[in-house]
Length: 309
Image 1 (cartoon, one colour):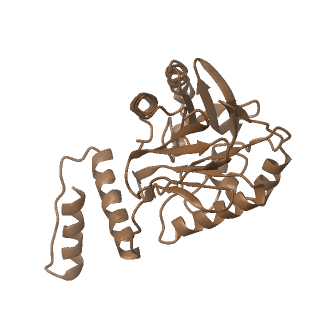
Image 2 (cartoon, rainbow, N blue to C red; image 1 turned 180 degrees about the horizontal axis):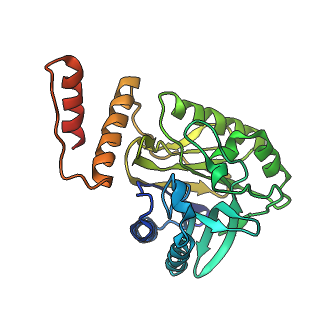
C-alpha cells in the first residue's frame, strides 16, 4: 500500500436541516473508512452538513452557528482527511463551500463558482459566486488534489480554471447534489469524461442519494481516470461507503467495484420507491392510506408503496 492512496466515496442520504444527525453520520462514516478500510481520505457530497437543497433554511439567523458547531466536530476527527460540503460566510456573502478537514486543521476551502439557477435550482437566491482565482490545492501522502462542486464541472470556464492552477494537481474531487432524471446519469458520465480528457486528470465524483420534497437523488457516484475510463461505479439509490485505490506510481485509479447495470424501467421504479419512502419517513408520517380503483394505475401505486414502505 506504500504506493497507493485509498479514498472513500461517501454516498449518503441526508436530511435537510438536521445538522446534528448529518454530522454524526459524517463522523461515523469517516471512522469506518479509517478503521475498517484504512482510507486516507473520504469525500462527501455537496452541502453535506445541512443537506441539499436547504432553500430558505439558509435565511435563518442560527444556521451558521449550527454549521460552525458541526465544523468543530469535524475538526476533532483524527487520522483521516474529510472533504465536506457546507454553507459558509465569505467576505462578500454566503458561499456554497467545500472544506477539507484533517487533524484539527482546515487544509483547504473552495467556494462553488457556477451557481445553477434553472429548473429545480435557485442557488443565486442564497449564495454568491466563488472567486475565479481560488487556489485550493492540498496534498495528502504526496497526492495533490483540487476541488469543484457539481455545476462547476458543466462549465467550460471551470476547465480553464483547473488548467490555470499553477501548482501540480493529480486528482479532481467533485462534490455533487445532482437529482435523478431518466438520462441524467449518462449525461454526468459524458460531462466528466470531457473534463478528464481536457484536464488530463482523473475525477472522483460523489453524489448524494435520497428523496427530498419533490426531488430524488440517485447517487450513481463514480471514479473516472484521465483516459475517460471508469474505475468504480456505485450503486444507484443506495447509501454506502465505496472504496477506491489511487496508484501513485501509475497515476491512475485501479479497477474496483462496478454496480450492475439497470434498465430504464428499473431505474424509474427505484426512483419512485426512494422518493415515496423518504417523503413518508422524513416527514414523520406514521403510515399511509391508499385508495384503490382496481385499475392498473392504482395497482402500480400499491406495488410501489409496498416495496417502498
